[in-house]
Length: 101
Figure: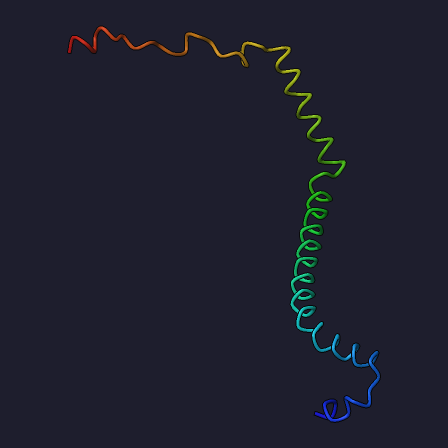
């Protein structure tokens, strides 16, 4: 109310600043709110990813995984009959018997 009464005495530069202050807040407040929510979500996702990497990809877990792969590789080399499936493990259905019934 007091601004409206003395608005004629204010310089045009100050009048522009007052207009900007009253119109800019209506647009800036929602933009900043959603922007902060988005940035906070990105930060949380980044923290979870870094935590997961630091827990899962440690030197110890990588060494254990490499040892496991080496053991499996030597098993494939020294005992290939355990890895390769045999053709005798299944039998074909006899279609002629089913047609006669």
